[in-house]
Length: 528
Image (cartoon, rainbow, N blue to C red; front, side, top):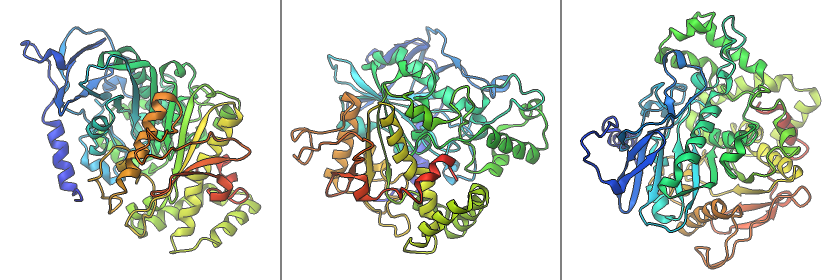
């Protein structure tokens, strides 16, 4: 049964229910309490799964004068606190309609933990989820990311979901402004928030049954990009050893020049000239003004946290000790066509093509036009296919190539099942209901997928988090058939095709994920 928007909102209201409060009367179940560096947090148990919601992972929230400042790490606290309700979500961009479902606040740096109450003798692998939303939307409160079902099926792992600053709050270049010299982190605060959350996880996850030395970061879309980018931040590798990146990688970034252009457009829209001016503006007003930079507020290749050439960094082995599982969906950009509606899609695609696309050398534009001329289907498909290659598909293959060149391990997948929506097809994010075990969430797909296939995908993800290899033996595989997932290499270019009724390895050249002559070069431009 499909869940309606009103039902989702009601679910969110139930999750909030109120604010987490201090427990001062001693009335709580100590078996549901975990002592952490910044307090003791008391969760709630349902069907043997304990959920801890709304745990702060910073010492001070990024409000007031701390807006656009680096996160403040958690400080010691002997208090006892409820962890019953999800925290608010960060400000992002109102153009993403899903954001209207959330209660937004600058007081947003919190995380959730799910663990099975099974008194396991050994520490469990930890999977830390970083949500997507184009770096401008989303939050841990999304019912899709409720991990009760996931842990009930896989009680041998612990899952953490983390929030981070979004859009204008999390990725805003300020250092070029007259009083911006004190804001040299503002362009990548969302990534620094995530890193601070990972530090909290390392310090505290053992109390929830997790192994701090076996952490996998895991995300989709912008979250997948964040996972990949975190592997390039110096000093980050002590906090995780693996990453799962679904439909997003290190191309989802912008140059300092592009970031400054976005800031200047925002300043013009607000009538501001300094950071001091911006600090006087309330979050709701900033949120509305951020629409001028819709789908452009990416992390910045600033040379401080992210290298100027992220591809070269992978190729030179910057993340060679991080095991990766990455992949893409067959019809990535069709999700945006379906979500925007055709009129808005055509306008948005035309606006994107007036940017970098228009500045490409004539021979490269000719290659793209040749590629697009051969795309069959509805009139929106040529732009959808080209932009899908630029944003997601070709980039995932290049990330596999460069990580392999750098001596790292990379398992690559190609997800192919289609939704019932003739526009959406196998679009961006439709696999989320599968990996989080929410078969009831069919708003984007219009149908459920084969149960055995879904269980197999989840089993592969968990097996990778446990061991660094997503392959399954016949005994481990839900269908009783072994699934040998080959490592990507630059010669054979093997991928695992996640076909709903035939999961199998194949060479990329046989599947034809990317057009090596006519679309692969797009990756050097990051995102058109």
